[in-house]
Amino acid sequence: MHGLIFRTLEAFISDAFGRDHWTLAVALADLPVTSFEAMLQYDATYFPKLLAACAQDLERAPSVILEDLGAYLITHQNHASVRRLMRFGGDTFSELLHSLDDLPGRTRLAVSGLELPQVHVRQPIPQHFTIHCSGTPTGFGHVLVGLLRAMSDDYGTLAVLDHCGVRDGAEVIEVQVIETAFADDRGFSLADSALAHSA
Image (cartoon, rainbow, N blue to C red; front, side, top):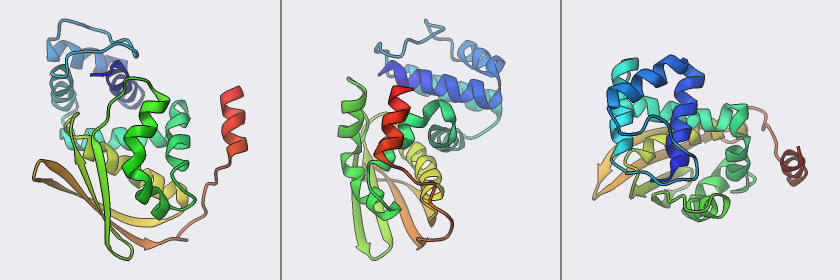
């Protein structure tokens, strides 16, 4: 598993709860490594052990930690590149949802070697979307729920998202777009992106 996934979990736990909680989680997980390099690959079995250790220490469900991690990736200033990557998906939240099929490919272009689960989006009726996530890391659907909740706020859209569990080997997310102009869109432009890259 790509080291960036471990480093992202480390950054979230450290920023949200304090460095001591990450140190304790690593100790509870009892892994042969105590720190992770962003561009290295690690045994995929380490991640569920670390997540379980974080859940034990923080007394929170793993699904809650993963959803909060997804929101963190959009809202925390140190991860502005993730927001930019998502905003490239479309000018509206609905366009972003339609573009999610391409998210694993866009991510690989941004970070070589980073493999995310396959994402398939369907729109059975207007304003209702069904998202299927299949592959590892397990639980990515919860990260995606948190990420998309934060992105709906970013677009100024009122949406209801629900992780419906696993069906036929895929995590299923239901999304209902309630109001597309519920609040002001935070806005995004290629010029802003270029300035951020040059900073």
